[in-house]
Length: 276
Image (cartoon, rainbow, N blue to C red):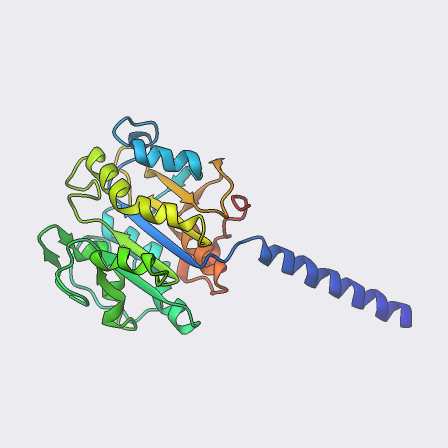
């Protein structure tokens, strides 16, 4: 009887150890920055002479060769990556107001922090749908009632934050319509990334932080096959052929900080094979 108890205890200990190892296989970056680009398929970006900086990121980090958006048009994809659901939105209409849980509120509730930085946003906390080249449809956090206005910031606040090691735990960076490849060219978007995100890429190497660059959707002609790139000191450089999507990306970020999967992200497994 005593042997049976010891056997059961040992089995329980081994199961706990295995679970701990599995949980520990995903890093916990001090900061994650997600940059969302617009409306281009994988083959338009990877290998393109118009995107030398993005391709350099793909070389120094993890390039997912089998990454997919969820649907069309743009706005539902942003909502899906942010909340695990399109919240019933299937177009680019504005404004919207949702009481549902989301990545930003999850982080804040758990004692972490979140902010969204949008290029050309006219003022901190602004709820305007359009202002010059700013489009609220690309800033999903603006639609959730449980997030304070201070989480909605102009991009001009971003460089000041990371230079002072004062970035939120998770940040989204959204270039404006001219610089996210929506209205501007691939080359213009690539140049914007180099000018504005390269300082962060250099910084992450000594600050246990991660950059994720992805696209909302393709151009409608590649089955929504998009590029997704991870760069940071915890990333094993290389190309990864496993299939991922916006839900799985959200699930991975949630797992990093011990958060439950939201909506459709709860059905996905976090990405585990790209870490040092």
